[in-house]
Image 1 (cartoon, rainbow, N blue to C red):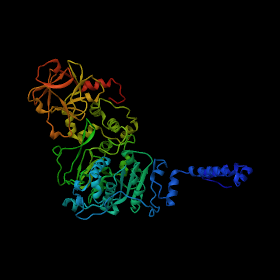
Image 2 (cartoon, helix red, strand yellow; image 1 turned 180 degrees about the vertical axis):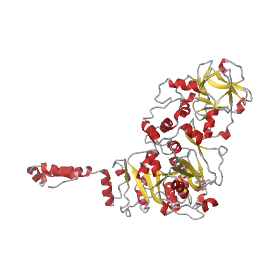
Image 3 (cartoon, one colour; image 1 turned 90 degrees about the vertical axis):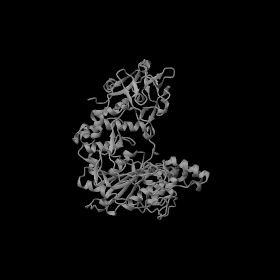
Image 4 (cartoon, rainbow, N blue to C red; image 1 turned 60 degrees about the vertical axis):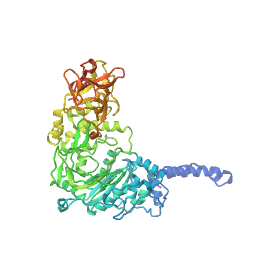
Length: 625
């Protein structure tokens, strides 16, 4: 008996056996050629499409079918939604065209030693200038400049003497995990070469490169051909878009090193970058370490070198990472490592065992956003520590916006942050919730994450503030009680922020409107979301009525600081102009005017307790205890 393992072949045999002899003889006659061709075609199609698309891909590659693109096998969905590219096959005969890039430069080449390169506009035609400006929007950095700078460009060794003299003991080889989606060619290559060129071979186990469902043609066969000689680079392709968080979780599972180093795909490593990241983890595997991160300019690709060791902080109102002011916690220049309350999250090292014990990233965090805060909080609260290294530098391209889109990214990020707050922040989560008027939406079930926290016997968020981030605890204790809607006594309508920079209006009060949640800080500043309540100082000189404007806090040095006093008679007084917040009833616009104690200048402002009590009645699916 013959056992046929291939379902296609088995089905083909059944089809042939089912033919009666008369039909079988007709296959050879001219009169039944059409029938013959039809049946043979059916058999061949059955054979072809019964195979797994991944197997088809591998078979064609083995036959040097260079026309096959990566997209042809992305449908080969195995368990886990990914496939590792087979680097054992011979692609030497495959003709590919790589995008323009410079491999190696000389000391006078553009961008060498991290210097900025100014692209000469005079060297370009009008059409080329127009195209260059358009191409900037592809990745939100000047890819024309990047293509002029060698992917093996030199960088200065800026380590201090104390760092150069520091001896490291025996260190394990690390797995570096990098995920990307449609990254620009020269930037991706510069990332890889900076790692390979400046990482001692015995400390690099592998680079796990996760292609998160890229669509750019140059990241298909051309990338596979380019990576062929790089024996320590593994290329993993996902079968659907995962997003940064899920892609990093996947990379951590596929990596084999004792220590994981997560990096973005638009970085450049400096000499001696990896040893300072690995050493503390060898001493204590619950330590998480991140480097000094000099910024790479998006226009010139110049690297801003600095010796400053910056520490991470956290805003309770936004649940976003911020850099701590130097005055809050001075850093000694003699320290090799400094404990940091939070980290930016793009670049850091962690032991694989500790990352796994902490439950990786929350698998229900989607896309990106909030994952660095989750990692920071649970590292500290569950018995670990987070440090920045004064001797490790990895430059990074910081952009005003990401070229990689995700459906409803703003809402997705907010949902992620709500999950982090619900699991890790205890009752302090309300400082974040109230800023968004408790618009939580569906954050999913957090039972498993709460059980993880319980099983690890993690500390409370109060402990975190007391022992790790007392600066924020101080802000909370000193914050004013007013937080909520500001209702005009005359009109019964609420102050509505609208779009940042636009004139303020009064609108009907809506309990869950994020544009109507105002908070008064101890210093007299009034905030709504990320915007300050203010006006142009020049407008009040003539004592005429001028519209109050909302200014964003992105450029605080260019804006006047407007502070307010909320008095017992319910007026809002501008301390700088000694004028009061008023309303033009004909236009519903908020204005400043000479104080007259009129009803139009009286405002009922909710206290924080009143605001929370109102939203508690909405019976939201959160724990209020």
